[in-house]
Length: 185
Image (cartoon, rainbow, N blue to C red; front, top):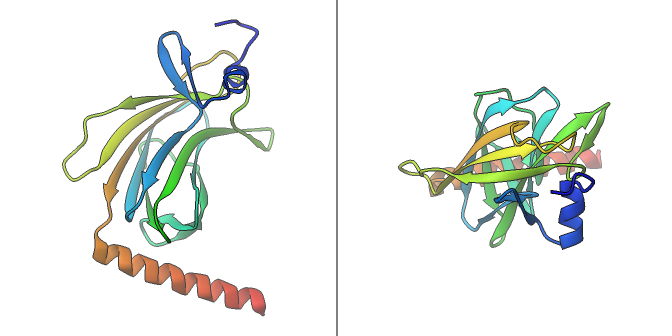
């Protein structure tokens, strides 16, 4: 790799979200297509420092919330402690949508992503019983040389049971209605 060109330079020059670095595919983000209610479990295995976070965003109207019932909207900034799993619930409103995950970091009070040597390597893992997919994401922040151990997370996806999905969707609609009433007052 040309030391004068960062990963961000290469992503932009090639107009892609995937590049090859030292025989490895480096991506700018992970995309998961969701058409049915889904649970996404995120476990941080390693975090260089407290400035490393994972961003989870949906492409369309959806309920993105903690499995414990808290609603997050369509984007969440996951500031997770090492080995403290977080479960997110994705409830598509109308039809399929894309959930995107990428790494970000805070530098002097400003959140950064997709700059410098920021990128991720996705490692597919064996899928546990009852899950739909599982992978490890090795993330490099944009600072210094690429180092894909600044943030390491394991992401597991599983289908949300229909009965639970219906209850959560109803709870989200009630929360949304309450927040709209609050804004009107």
